[in-house]
Image (cartoon, rainbow, N blue to C red; front, side):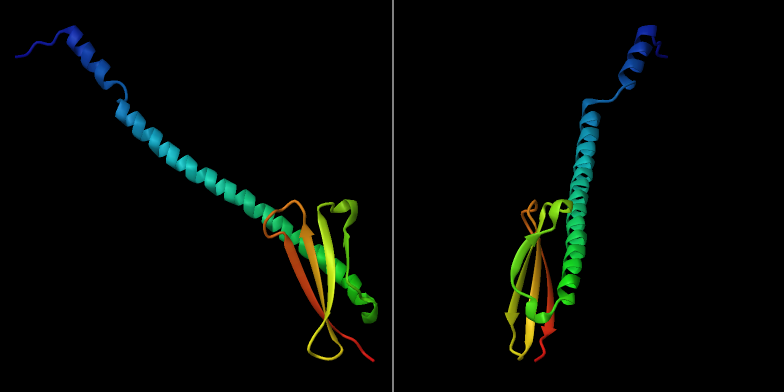
Length: 133
């Protein structure tokens, strides 16, 4: 029969009471991998939000300007450039007018650009107008 002393029982309790260094390192590795995935997902979400905001704003600005162009006489449409004022200071527009292969049909191309964005910062809207007599 083995007699255990009080110090032996105390030593056994102290050894089994905590985590080993290997367990802590594995837990930290799992945490680092999961946090990296979360941060990448968050970064991508922010990027997609900015792109979506640009697409929505540029489309609305282009449609508004194109509606004004459609209301004018087709012969009065000339290539020009401008901005959207203080409401949208980062956005500019340019209007191009070109002839097509079909007689009396003109291609009107409106480009809205965001000066803050570096990539994919253009939104184009094309309208074809028939000019009579």
